[in-house]
Image (tube, rainbow, N blue to C red):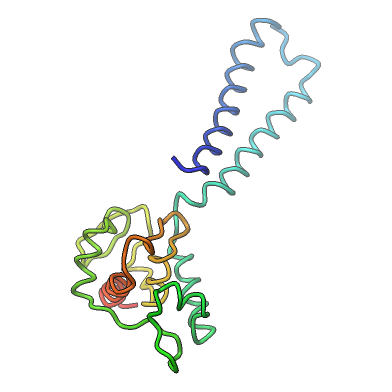
Length: 185
């Protein structure tokens, strides 16, 4: 269980306990509840709900990642003309000196096998892989570039775990090539 899940659980627990307390305990002790303290009770309810919504907004971001986030990464790379030096180093030095910093082409056939073995199909939809996951973005619709796919696989984020420590730079390039080629990115 992640830290964010624990925080969200704590906020949910407080909200549920408060709700149970004010609906079951307080009316038995004081049948006139909330009575003259209605404004205070209403304020407490609004604050608890606002705190829960804020917690979901802040800590729930890891639970889902949308295509828009991947598209933003792809757009940032395309707008700048080249990924920054940190991106090139994160893909394991896949860039070659003197070039624009693009990720070296991977083997799409090998990438298809890695896509299956790494469990990508559990979260993503990609017709070429026979994948219909709904947790992550639909890669057929997102059509990520090879650079953004490699970056996302390496670093993770937006709910996706990082695979930079589990897959070699070559395997990441292969998966990125497969996704890009299959989705038409």
